[in-house]
Every structure is written in C-alpha cells, then in structure tokens.
Image (cartoon, rainbow, N blue to C red):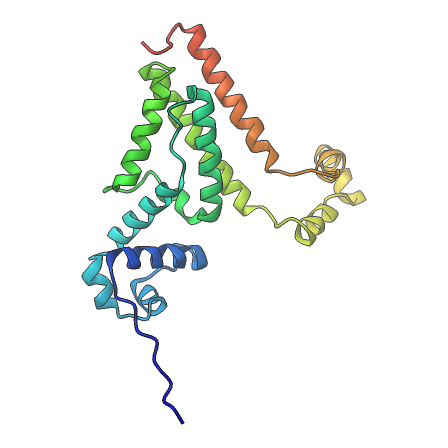
Length: 224
C-alpha cells in the first residue's frame, strides 16, 4: 500500500497570522480569541505566532487595520454627500461581517496604515464641502450612527422563525393591555409584509447628511 502523502505545511508569515486571526475572530468573537486558539487554528505553535506578531495587542491592531481595508474610501469624483454616503453604506456592510470590530475601530493606540489612510480620506472628503468645525461634527455623528446601527442590527433576532416567535409574544391580549402603543406599532408596522429593520439605515443616514448640509449652509460655513 502506498504511503499517504502529507500536505505540506504553509509557511507562517505575519500576513497569514493576521488573516487567520481575522477569520477566527469572525468565528468565535474577539473575547475568545487567544494566541493558543489562533495557533491551533493555524496548525502552529504559540511561540511561532509570537515570532511574527509579538503581542495580542499587535494582532488586534493588525486585524482592525484589515477591516479598514475592506471599507470603501470616499470616491474623489463625487460630491461630499454622495461620497460619504457610499462610504457609510460600505462600512455598515463590512462591520456586519465583523461585528466584533465595532468597539475596536477607534480605540487602537497604534493604528495601522489602512486605518490612517481611511480617516485621512474621509476627512479630506468632508473638507470638500464643510468647514473644519462641521467636519468634526459630521465625522463624529456619522460614525456614531453607523457603529451604533451595526451593534443594534447584529443583536436583533434572526429574520424568520425567531423573529416571528418574538412578535407573537408581543401581540397577545395581555401584552396589548399593558403596552398598547408598542402592541399597535408591532401589529401595524413591524408585522406588515416587507418590513425590514435594515431599511432604517438609509433613512437615518440620509436624515443626518441632509441635516449636516442644511446646518452648514445656514451657518455660512461651507468649506472655509
């Protein structure tokens, strides 16, 4: 009988460590991401991981930077509102795939090149239509909305049976008696065909962008 050939082990690199850490964080969450679990997932040893990325903090810096590489930069050929809108839509989609990243996006002490490039591009885009002060307001409000929406959306029950079970609990007579407004809202809106909580993202984002534009115009602070 011929001997089974062994699959050659992939050479370990910094890039492989970080991509493996990103995949593992998506699978088990950031709280359970340890060097040992990462080494096991890469068929390696903890000391080999440390040789390429010396600490867990550097791994977190690296995978946050990888998340930023997935978010579209504002298109320089568009007006600031259209460009920033597209960037926010992209950020929501990317963070929906990596919800563990939301609390880490602005907390890293050693941001990577993709993180810095992203922030630079967004500030430059906002400065194309807003004053420095309005740019600060806009960036803070927009990211608070995007990050908060992702957290809220990721915590909701999955569409289908889980959501239907929750809705059923909210429409019985006892619930209606104690919480009439919430009962009516659930029956008249949430349980109607085609309802999708995700649609609120577009409404909220457009509301913020229009508000920023109107406030900037009324203050006479466009791009000084």
